[in-house]
Length: 418
Image (cartoon, rainbow, N blue to C red; front, side):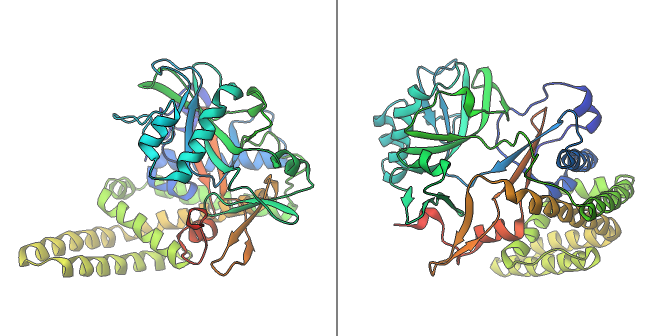
């Protein structure tokens, strides 16, 4: 996880951007990044609140919809160190780069995945026609190609990943999709003097590109919420009460010496993240801080026992015993601070879900989950991303809806279709 700059730095410094868009942090997990992470979360929500009230004069945060596309692709027309227009889907910033300039190279890397190779060749074909700005690399997510855009009776639909997107055939957007060969959402641009000296910016605009009737392109950024989202008086009060509670808990937590001690215990934090994911897979929400600490303690006991059973020698079993006994001791000794930490995560998650409920109305497409039995269940957007002027990015995702669906074997995924 990356370090976040302080809110004071956020207001006063410039151009502190990450080099590569590799990871977004869930809003509640900012608590696990220390005081600066907490401060960023609090002030991010305050800025979103002002944005929803339409009272802010200057946006300090940028809000975008997370699209559930796949795969992610990097494209360029001209960039220092790259011989000509091309693309990559992963490894662009790795030591051994899989860069493709022609169909032969696509087949070399991905010939054993014909569906993937097909859309990469289509993208390669259209790169020269869409006008990616010189000396920039744009990153986006595929939504569909001409074989995966399905025309039903009244809708076009595409299912790139977990979410099924639907668009009415007779809508303005549906008419745009009708004769396209490929669809992509652009979300990140990279600028720099080479691949080794590059920074990400979250401000793509498809209006900067050349329109091609065969390529549907969109960007995820929400310029204005006016007319789409309105906070009712009771919702304003709910927000103000919740943010006050979060700030009170965060002040107590930030003063705690044990807080930094907890964060420095990487082994325990990693296991706590695994514990969180186990709750999401089971569809169980964290509700009571004291109870969750107790459950986490039991989780450590059970995981330690399971790992010990896999070992064949007494020495190896004893090493597992010592490791988990120490982890349980650390948790017990810092129980009160752990309760504050989890309480803060629960409060931030509650506030996050309040915003998600309001923002779910602004998507460009209707969104569904498809069950293995063929039923379609209405769902919200994959989530939203909030970025600041320095490139810090946090995701607002309902982990007990989208993330649970992502894990669930009962929900059909786009890549499982024949």
